Amino acid sequence: MELKQIAGKQLIYDGTEDGFYKEHSFKLDNGDEIKFSPMDVIELEDFEKEDSENLLSKLLEILPSIKRFAPTPDFIYYKNLEDITPNIKESDKYIFIISLGEVQPTRYQIYIEAIFSK
Image (spheres, rainbow, N blue to C red):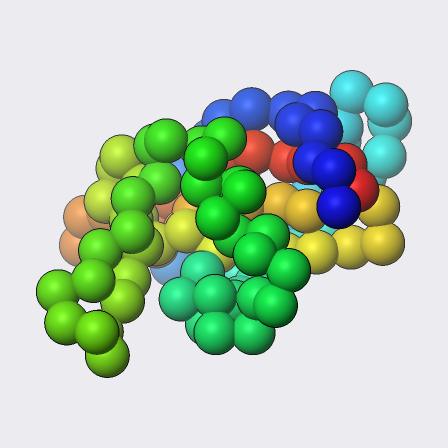
């Protein structure tokens, strides 16, 4: 699969827990509206276990801001520059890398790290 990055990093949520778990939406430059909930994304370490196409390694080559950590062979995790957990979401047309989490007590953020067309 050839990946073409169509959007870069953008902050789409910065607020309290009340709004964090709601459905979020944003528009791409081509007019497509993307909707997602923090509950329907997959953490990169879980995606890596099922990634038979080595898609994740291709994405990480393009996104140096996301780092893989493996303190032990059984414990692998990823973080972005803001120290938030990156996740992945796929649709029929796109692959999204979305970092989200609590950055301070009761303050949550969601970043779109990158969007790729399939």
